[in-house]
Structures are given as C-alpha cells and as structure tokens.
Image (cartoon, rainbow, N blue to C red; front, side):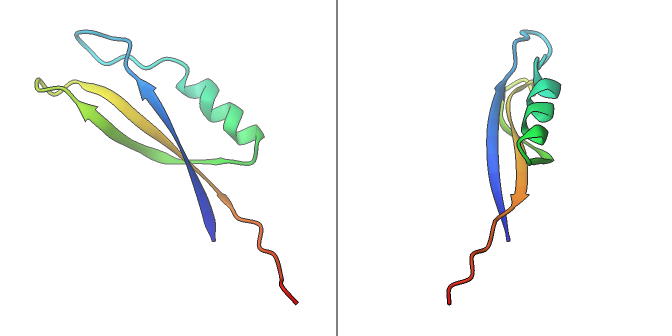
Length: 67
C-alpha cells in the first residue's frame, strides 16, 4: 500500500507559466523517501495558461503486524 503527498506550485509567470523550484522540491522529497509520481494541473486560466499544479509523491506505507 502507498501513501501520497501533494505539493502545490504556483506559476510566477504572467504571459507564460513559469514554475520555479520544482527540481529542488523533487530532490528534497527523494531524500525523505518519497518518489515523484507525476503532476496534476489544479488551475488553468481562461486563456489556457497553467497557473497552479500539484506535484505528487508516493512512498510505501510501513505495515505493522498485529499479533
């Protein structure tokens, strides 16, 4: 079983979407045992510009045995 974490990124661009720090965020989460699983657009402007997106990370849940 997996657990998931979502990190929202905001565009810092006006005419075209520009996302900063995405590589650093992915690297940081990798050192914590998270695997980058993909991204989902969370806000697209009326003119079609991607404004926000969620980076998705996953890792296996530790399973505990109950005796």
